[in-house]
Image 1 (cartoon, rainbow, N blue to C red):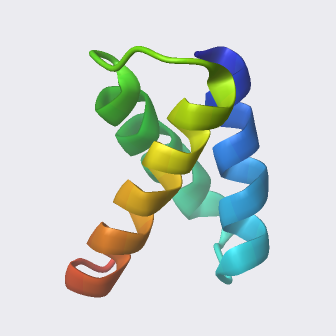
Image 2 (image 1 turned 135 degrees about the vertical axis):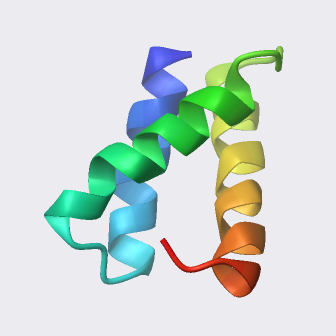
Length: 61
């Protein structure tokens, strides 16, 4: 799961203007979201990015 979280963080910071102080918050959200998920790192990363994009539209970090 660690590799998936790192992929998500790299991709998400390229997609949005994410201040450094918000990175730990986003990382926690991703880790919490993926905690009960199973799959390969690529699938987990894609699912987590979808999750972040969905909360990005409804919630400010």
